[in-house]
Length: 327
Ligand code: SAM
Ligand code: SF4
Image 1 (cartoon, rainbow, N blue to C red):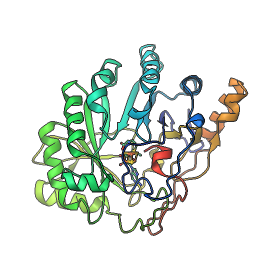
Image 2: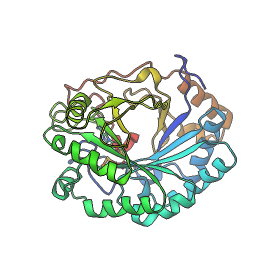
Image 3: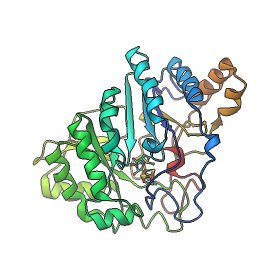
Image 4: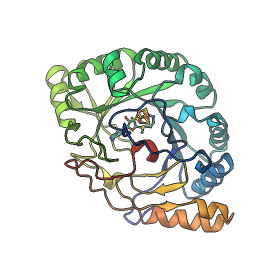
């Protein structure tokens, strides 16, 4: 359906859990982490009720995210439901964002359920640095999972958050590694979602920095490839793989935004960078699908025109972190 500004909203990012087996330093606070109670999570039935309404409202693409979606115990049950909806033609695409820790175990299952494309977060290819930024993660385990996913036929996009004084020297190497493995890649600017003890300015590295570096070393040109997403797509003269740049801070893409987000406890955020939201749970409890339909429709319709992220604060959005809202 169209929102107030004529944008066609057809994409849902659904966070199925706020839990994660990693603790990326830019995503979650290290101290005083807040987690929802498990009983607050949308149940299978509730997930299905909401999904069915969204299909009616024109959502035809769903990305499952979190937290880490693959650590939710009944995730396969919900993905199986989506797979059936896709076969019925109600959905065009089911996508998944993961940190890759559970891919070794789940890759084949995901492929069998009709999932063809996954995004895997990877901010460093150096074990110690990976361990540092994720607060304890094992690069080797994640790489095992990524290679297993590739073997199973999943198309992989590597998402790398650009982080000042952390991974600027790895940008070129990551491009080479993605090229060798035939992975797409996106470089993303850090967003001030969630207030951390460190300033966001100390983490922020604009995509212009990465572009300049890549252009100098490999040549860089924009492709005609267009998706409805926020990425601008480029290629190098040296490699065949596509490189996306997501610049929510330096060059926002709100005019073409086609997405909404729902958290694992049923809060619908029409815009990641705005606290305007509607809690769907009371409507679900009333078992009044018509009312639920109306409230979702209204929320999509009134999606804000744009976000107003400012990087020179500890967090523009203060109490909501990416592991809750879903990246
Ligand atoms: N755990 C999964 C993962 O890491 O891909 C899915 C959830 S995670 C919140 C989704 C994406 O959001 C990841 O690519 C992560 O790097 C990104 N992300 C988390 N916090 C961010 C922030 N403050 N700014 C920009 N991207 C962020
Ligand atoms: Fe977990 Fe993903 Fe956040 Fe890292 S970015 S802490 S993997 S939810």
